[in-house]
Length: 439
Image (cartoon, rainbow, N blue to C red):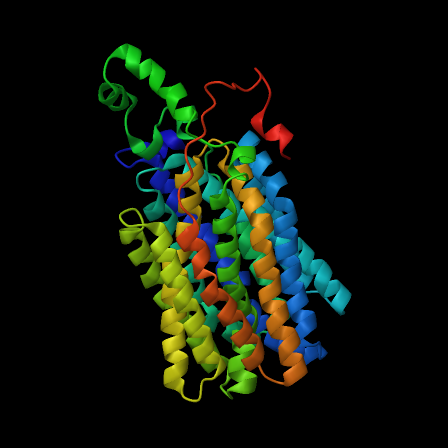
């Protein structure tokens, strides 16, 4: 596969393209369309917003629990095999969703969807891309994440299918499509460039050696570089690890609440049709694409902390606008602000972690971060759903989440790069896997 695709293009960019396609499938069929399913399932079964929010939150709990284990497996065995298993589970999950008759069956289907999405999508793809890029890491992650944004553009199509052929047929067809398209896309993914005669960023080994100087100096370059990478244990002992994770989780308070409840808020509280509400989501994700392009341009040039903090304020203002919207213009401004903030900030979270902690143990480090981030992903939909059931609108819930997200911009401002670990006087025991002690 690599020999056929290598040519004049660095193979890492083929992986970015594959990741784009996989992210598109996951977003279009599940993440971005979940809110449309919520509207129809509530109409057909009469389930409460809290119950439907709980199902989404269950996905995030599973991902958080799986995070450290999944990170260790990916670091040890590579992302491709994990993703292939995930594609099959993901597809079967949608087929199970098409057959549900009760809330318990719905939660069981979500259980499979959550595991499949976690093993297939953003987590393993990010680990793979981080391993293949350094100087252009933010750009590569932003381009890959464009697939998620473009998936949101298709929400009106998914909403149309849900209303015309029904949610059951739409869910079953989604499962078939995921397996047929997802398995070929995962074939492109590889673990590390060095294992296939490539180098990070596509820089030839001879160029690296000449840049390092004499042959003797070049021979010492690899171990010196390795000492700059943090182990998982070293990373979680730094304030930066916790500050980035808390900031990321706070951002997802808003993102997850919007994913689950925006369509319900626009249709029930603001009186728009499902088709019009879906167009708002399409606008939001179109602007998200613009944000990712902006992030790809500025992410590797400017301080990621300041960019992320600014995006947090935009998230907060956007959520307040849609919570108290009285005109379509306010809804449009919300979509623009939230889409830009999400698009710019999203890929920078992982780029910042990789910049700070290196790529040697990135999978495990990202896995432990996911466990913390999960709190925001779980709390956002639940807070919005519980307060909406109690008050009859989303104003209170959206306000609480917006205020928290706005203040959480401070986490990113404080998340300064930690000093590289110095293991010159305390080498690790020979043959002991670094990750074994922290899993």
